[in-house]
Image (spheres, rainbow over the protein chains, first blue to last red):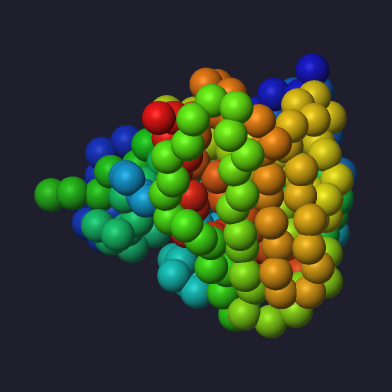
Length: 120
Length: 106
């Protein structure tokens, strides 16, 4: 059974750093395109970042230069390192699997989400 | 960047009604269009991919159509469990979601 479990969300001050984890089971992270998608409180979905099976990475303009997506193949885990956090980064962060390896992603499995709150 | 515009932003319908949600892309995306359902407090769920293909396990009352820039999600007979927000998403280029359509039951 495919499962994605996020962790690492927390209350953090503006300018701080946080690393989110997404532990996968039932499939191999490195063989799939994997994305992070976030949702600010009461708002819609916003794609954040993707890592392709090749290792190539891409980011939304809103996080470029501040966030880094990576994976640990030995742990079958996806990460999102978030630096220089801002109040507008406050959101529930979901990891999601792309089952079609399409450029923009077709997300067939999602984690339960982890809440990041950026506030002083 | 490709912009996705959904309409309406919300709707209220009765059980058994036919419900239609539209999604328009700012440029042609062929059939690279997905639909998701998000129930309150839950993660999104893939309903339709490639504009018209039903994801495994999704009830057949859900259907999708369209290509190019104009797309439609139809619920043929609205059920109480369909209370949710529905999002379109283009997969032609790095991901963009529509702003969502909240479906309420009268």
